[in-house]
Each structure stands twice: as structure tokens, then as C-alpha cells.
Amino acid sequence: MRSGNLKHKITIQSYTETQNDFGEVVKGWADLKTVYSSITPLSAKEFFKEGVQAEVTHKIEMRYFDGVKPKMQVIYGARIFSITSVIDIREANKTLQLICKEVV
Image 1 (spheres, rainbow, N blue to C red):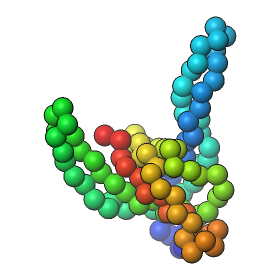
Image 2: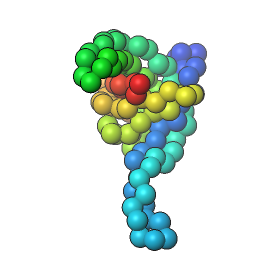
Image 3: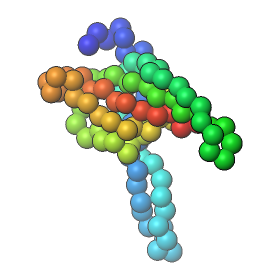
Image 4: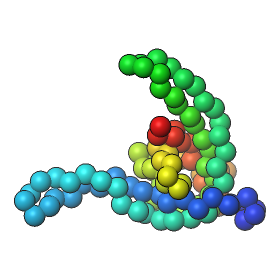
């Protein structure tokens, strides 16, 4: 992977549940790691479900690091991407490819 292609600074976040001082469960997102990546749109579709909704999928490629899983999310600026699939290219532990849906 050429470093010149990694021009998008993203933050990987994992879902967390903690308890506050009153014992209530607080759900949220915690930053896992900030890295540089490439983001490529794959497809877009609109569908009718209680109004018109859009679904956009993207491929995000970055250098490998352990711990990225589906159900995590990617933050890029003001945009949020939900990770649906994590692929270790050639099982070489060098490049990760994330297939994501943009949260609209």
C-alpha cells in the first residue's frame, strides 16, 4: 500500500456501555485509534421505508492493526461510517479493507 493513497484521516470507534454514578447504563462510542486511510464510494441506492432513505457503501483501506471488528464505526470529519465487514487483504497483516455503510 502506497502511503500517498492514505490521505483521509479517520478515527475508528468501538461501542461502549458504562455505568454512571447512579448505576444507569450509559451507551456511547470510544475512540480506538486514529489513522490515515483511503475512502472509495462503492454504491448508492435509495429506498422507500417510511419515506425516502439513502444507503451509501464505501471501501476504506488502511494499514493493518489488530482489533478492528464489524459493529465498530469510522468517523471522517462530520461523516459516520458503520463497519459491516473487515478484510485482511491476502491474510498478510499489512492492509485492512473495511466495507462500510454511511450513516445518513
